[in-house]
Every structure is written in structure tokens, then in C-alpha cells.
Length: 254
Ligand SMILES: [Fe+2]
Ligand SMILES: [Fe+2]
Image (cartoon, rainbow, N blue to C red; front, side, top):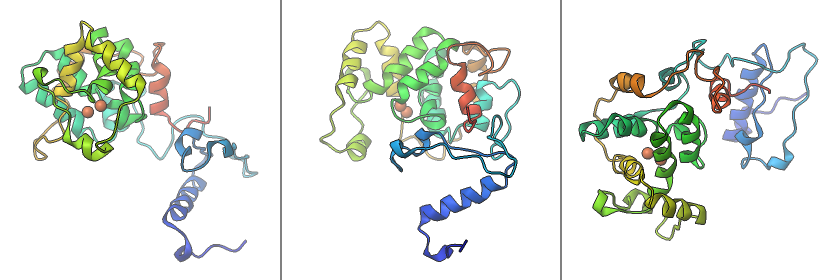
């Protein structure tokens, strides 16, 4: 078959061709989940590709294009090997630490956006809360869940103004959806409101970009406040284990 001239391909066609070449070199066949491409293509058009006749099977484990994780991965291993840049959460936790906040709040700040950097952006507060719920105090996961809604509602008495960045990011006409408004109304009157509010207070975007922030700074706080399972995150039987396994092996066929 005639090979297309690379010069005539669009950027995304070139990226697809590169990905195809990379996956052709693997010993197993990798298929993206529908969610990876939904939007870029119509999800209703999603079809599982057919196996070729070259003897390869679907990938059912570690993706060789990713760094290998330890057999019993810890939370910090996920930061090291799977999460994208952690500068924002490290800065938030550093800010909370400098303000003399409790370890519980520092941990909540460290974990509040792990869904954004490691899993799924949409409804990130809910996903992050679910990821950590089996391993932290209930107050910590509760605070993480509701920071998503509280970000849209100022509370100047608590030290939180509506972020100017949100006007830029979402437009000045942006109104949170009804489920966000309802979550805020519920959280506003909850006994842990100020814990969740503290995440938003320390949720900084204007922190000194030259500040040195390191994961190791928080290793002791994590050790004391995150119940790391002996089997490794994902290989315990917690209600969130499957989510950690999926982050570990995001391209498993099933
Ligand atoms: Fe967030
Ligand atoms: Fe954040």
C-alpha cells in the first residue's frame, strides 16, 4: 500500500502515525480506552480493533512505554512514576505547612489535585477523594471532595477570594452547575467546612515559581497520616484499589 507523504499529514495524523509505529514495536497490542479519545472522536464510533495475524496478544499488564513501578507501590511511588508535574500540590502543601496548619490539612493540600495530575480532570475533587478515602481520615477525603465546589465560592472571612485566574480561565459569565452549587450549600454548613476551605486558601497559583518544593519534605507526614497497604496500593482489597491499578497499568486491555 502507498505510504502517505509525511509532509502532507496534519500534526495529529503524524502523532497517530508515530504512536502506531511505537505500538507496532511492542510485543503486545495496546488499545486506548474509549475515554481516552472520546471527544476527539465520536465515542459511538469506538470499536475494539481486531487482533492481527502476527501472533501478538492484547497487552494485559505493564505497559513497556511507562516506567516500571515497584511490585508493592506506595503513594510516593505514584507521585514518582505516574503522576504529572506535582509542583502545584507541593506548593499548596508547602504553603499550608508554612502557615502552621495541622498535618491533616497539609496532607489534604498535598492530595487535593492528584486526580488532575494522575487520573481524570473532570470532577477531580470527587475522584481524588475516592482514591484516598480508604487510606486517610474521613475528614481529609471529605475536604478533598468538597474543595472542588468551594473553589467557586468566596469566603473572605476565611481568607478566600474568588480567584482572578478563574475569570480568565472560565469567563466572567461562568456559573457553577447546579450539582456544584448544591455541594457548596451542603459543605458550607458541615462541621468540616473549614478543613475543606483551608484547601482552597492554600490552593495557590501565584506561588514563587523558583521556590524549591520537594516530595521528600512530606514523606513523614504521609507516613503518619496515609495508611499505606502492605500489599501495595492497588493490590490491597480496598474499594479504591482498582483505581490505583488502572493508574499503574492504564493500557491494560481488560
Ligand atoms: Fe482542585
Ligand atoms: Fe489546586
